[in-house]
Image 1 (spheres, rainbow, N blue to C red):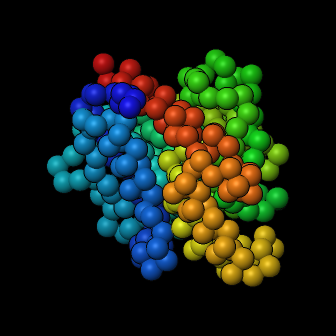
Image 2: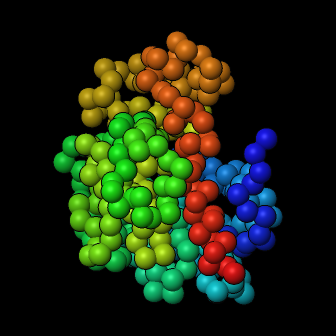
Length: 285
């Protein structure tokens, strides 16, 4: 059994970036809430941390009563099904404002998927619909750049790896002075550190079971976009993901789904998140 990454009593705010209607749809569709995935990670890797959740896309968004950003050691941003460059959307504008506040204050942030788009936009980069369409399920052949060797995010990560992913938009230009840390053919920007905001396009917090649930819920879109011939085929694929989650040593399922240890083993899959916790430690001293 491995030791936790940190035993510090950090106070971490998880910022759920999905609107209420999407969260309700998660419940109807048997999809895990992304804040719960981060809570599970922190329970294992930062057992003395306390976590609180806010729903920033809701019209009544506010920090927990009696707190300011200085009461928290770090902030985690979940994914979202909103569009970050729709800056006049009342569900998006507060997220841009809050991310700018945290970046200006140098507060440690983590963001998966939506996070890299949000941080890049706030810091002067650009985001657009990916001309290659949706990247879903497993992002293949992500490669670390030369700049990654000088950055702490990917310490201990293989030079090439696969990772969980589900997105339509992509960062088309990083902010000036922000090194690209990881890339693949589908989405050239897969990871970056934007000031104090560590972010990936892929999802280290996911696992096979949770991605299987998400794929099953996205069946209509995946058929409509031409990835599967029908929804039954989507459900079969999603079920095999969940089967492999329950039996990760199945050579047959590993081969069929083209899944290696970089997907199955959290010690590889979650390297970036553990390195981020070490960054949080260093900032809290």
